[in-house]
Length: 428
Image (cartoon, rainbow, N blue to C red):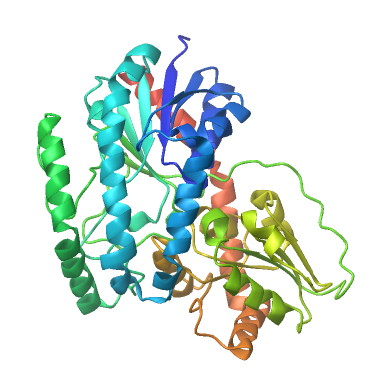
């Protein structure tokens, strides 16, 4: 067997990064080589797992510390917008994100051709929401990884990406799509100008990426997939059923209070942890309940005092090792948290604030695998009622058990690695 080289280029966020790490580990277990193309701020993540990683500037060069502060400041500056409905985030948070994303594609084009020529990959896997022309033009198969909600691959019969809308809200879908296109048009025109300069045809308004002609890996679980007007080609679009990575073991600490109470895990992700007022409000509520809780507070641990005896906070938890041991999860709807809860059969209450968290919150409720909650407009009684439903609803528990068994039987990382190797061998 000839050893192949697989290049992974995930978005600079922990969810896509760690998903690609899991697939890369499976590729190497099968006797091949995996390398990473990386935002400079994420190089240590991949090197920490033993991979070669090559920096690709996605913005004006800055130190990793400056980059981390940039995104923390960006998210924290957007907290007032987290109170808005998804359609009302289009002309602030979403617009500003797309401006940054388009800039990232322009910056990457300066580095990618030389890096790809150096590492000579047989296949390139890109997990992002925008086209990098150099990857498409390099002359080897490229694979798109969709680690966000499945509706990132659009279809007129399903809710638009980022909308958080019900499947049945057809008029809402139309209104969201119209406003998105109106808001995004100047940014999209700029992006199409960039595509033309790179020798690529323009995209239709609202589209920033395309499906790969070779292979598209959907992190989403098939049991909750949307019913599309145009079904996806089952060969070219493969569901990875969560593709949950292995993480270090975690032993549940002893609690001084509610020692036998149901155990909750609360996390809004590394960026959502900046919403400290909301996390403090949840901790105050938990103090009045029969539950125990592990609460991820990210880099803001020093801002918390007087933690009740039935709550343990920390800056980070090995989430795939924690979720199997808890009774329910409260999270922000990020796709890792979303799929991990389903993979381990745990009910979730999703308090979304941005991006595909809105879609995942609606999806977990519409498919009966958990509940969505307003992020701020809830009373203590309403939230406790939702938690009790998650703990005690037999239909939800049965549904989660079925979905979990299906997902765990698939071994998404090995499936992804096998498909990538097949592509490499077919086109060698």
